[in-house]
Image (cartoon, rainbow, N blue to C red):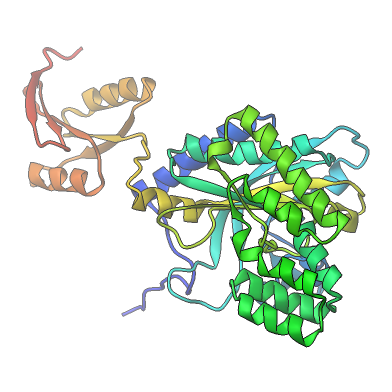
Length: 416
């Protein structure tokens, strides 16, 4: 007997109602992005390895899926779509002086060490605003994230905002080398402030700089923590970062999204290419961020176009987990079954055409003499169809509501 193949570890099949819900959710999110003037772009699933090389700042090389083409060039499945969009924008819009607004949806692939529940293939939907370095551009991104999450039904979620320059200025003021910076970044990300304190003690860092690191755990919350952060900021760069966040909050209130905004000055960003404002969105029912984003003013320069940019990616699979666990309904187009015989085929086709013309989804089944009605009822319930029209040769229709089990007999009269 031939062995059946299953999916590799870290990937899965999505089908039927679950797949419908995911596609409907993506469509709603895209509507929001289009509403802000963002235009669709599709980039290749795999690129030359250099698009994701270490200097770009996405993930380590060992976590990439790498392979070769016939000419021996090293290729990689994309772990992140932003570098692909940056590469495309640097070429396609080389001479464009106005800001470029692009949005996308696609799958990403990361060959990380597996643990329970973590997928190696994820669907991401995102937006990139290329060619503008302004307060308004940063706020537009945050407003889009909040509007998008509200559009798909989320009510309880928070978008945490930080600034790379704040953490970076603390590192620089402490005089840390690159290796120590990387270690401190890792410790802060894992909220291990005792470890940070130990490193600073070993480096003989000045007391007022240590004090700034020590208050980091407190610099999380509403807009009120920004004043505290401003007092702790040891450099002009850090103070400018906080001032920028305060100005952002003022503009965000004009968009009416401030209730979903909070600040986290310990945030350092998951990708190395971030240069300014960074943000992540969280909600109940998922252990990871459902949105990641930030400013990346030097990324396009690596592809030949020196221009500032900001963007975000919604991790659609994490979002779907959250919607499911919060029992937030995703309305999908439902299927109706028409079950007919050889003698009622013409009638069935006419009915199906009429329903489809009205935007309804119809699945047709031709039954044989031995087929029982109960088997079609069971199938309809299993596939989550909403109704079944059981055509009989005496010109009646047994109409069954598959959700309630209610049946109704309809006399269709003489067929034309």
